[in-house]
Image 1 (cartoon, rainbow, N blue to C red):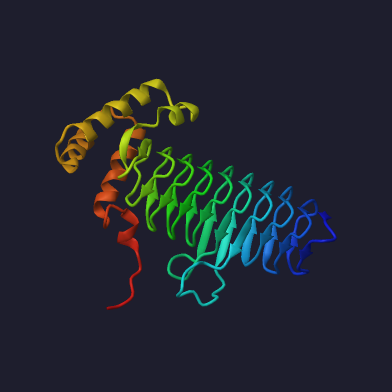
Image 2: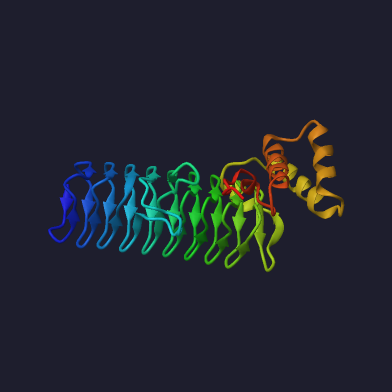
Amino acid sequence: MAISKLAVVHPKAELAPDVEVGPFGYVGPDVVIGAGTVLHNGATVVGHTRIGQRNVLYPHACIGAPPQDISYRNEPTQVVIGDDNVFRECVTVHRGTPKESGVTQVGSRCYFMACAHVAHDGLVEDDVIFGNNVLIGGHVHVEARANINGGAAIHPFTTVGRLAYVGGLTRIVQDVPPFMIVEGHPSRVRGINAVGMRRAGISEEVMQAMGKAYRRIYRRGRPQAEILEEMEKEDGWPEEVRYLCAALRATGSGRHGRYREATRKRPPA
């Protein structure tokens, strides 16, 4: 274990033998950090936080701080992080609240660029990229391989779908459909994320089907529910298109264009 003499690691923290903590780093008492993880100078990990293997925290990244929620009363909520993630300078990940599962969760192989923020009770799946200054609100779900570009801000209880691409500086207040590009002011679906799909190894045949589905859903000028009902009855659509249809159905069943609003715990009247 390579711990700088200028770092502070609480004796109750559990660190794998090869964890590195740089000068002025701080690790609190309820923290568990897996093998190969590196905390650069000034990085901080506090709260009931579990970090997996081979993660890298750059200077002044802060993981596990209390949520920015005025109803929080220091309950023992958590942050759980997988393996091989990169948290660049000044990235923040806040722990959960009792309003949901009490856990903020990050998967594996994610890349968070400088000053990005993951709010309380968020779920970020595997292989997600956050650009500089990306902000996601509380209870946001970001599905695998989504790419959210610099300065984008995501409304609480929003879902960003699998392999979606959110343009820089975009304000997102409704669910982002999987496999789609969403950007602009106001934000709207602009096309399919062909580059992301190709990088993920999705076949040209499936991409052509996704393009056909996009044109049918977004360019026909008919009620979306009618189009989805027709497509769901048709044979031949690949799994990815059926996943898109299911996601759009879920969004339609939510509130304000956000599926997760329908699952929100609300205080009694």
